[in-house]
Image 1 (cartoon, rainbow, N blue to C red):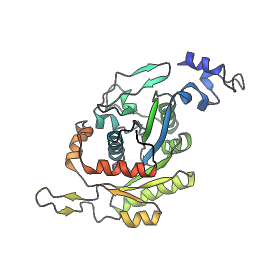
Image 2 (image 1 turned 180 degrees about the vertical axis):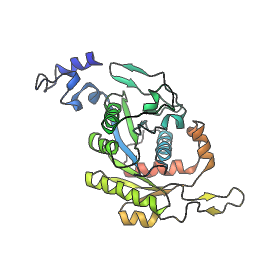
Image 3 (image 1 turned 90 degrees about the vertical axis):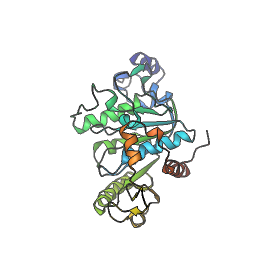
Image 4 (image 1 turned 180 degrees about the horizontal axis):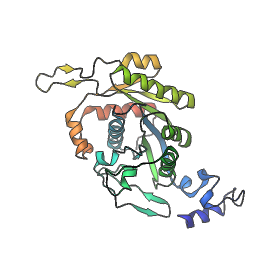
Length: 286
């Protein structure tokens, strides 16, 4: 990769300034990778709270957009708790690279994925790093992955408002954020922190998705509020953001995710979520 960057340095306006070199490039946006990758829209999926289904929502959006014919990638920025490869049934250990960067593995339907779990000897190996290293890895995923052309890149964020979410919002050209919540008031309190963080950094919030809003009895189809009554409407109004939708707790979806077969899921929420996203960040039909 350094050979290609040295060739690029010959025509860079910063070449020779302040000791700039391929290893310490002062203008990474003008590096080879910056000119090679063409990513039209970057969408982060965020909550602030763990366990509410950010990775589920990210994966459903990716599947839905892919079915609509868009070129989709997923950047798993949850470095210490990555789950995207398992959800899509992708195993690590076979990564390849060119002078242009790491080649992201593709799912059966063509969704490109990058995640730290693809680099580990086993998917249950822990990543025990401090914040700056985590943030650095996310920047590398963005700058050193050979994404080429994508219509939508979805970034699955870790919980909280710390180093990694801050790095994503400040270092990546994020076009919008999808917030994920759950019916409990405790969850909403933490989600509001994430909303305020996005507002302070000037990153648009596309809408709120309430996950695990209800479950349907398989025998009588009664709607059951397993985690209490929904607060999605009033919460979205309080935060002045649109309500993207409400997702049920679905044992079939959970089972397919455990099996790495989310692309086999046929629930209508896949279409609804992806259509809502495209309405807010439209692209020409592929």
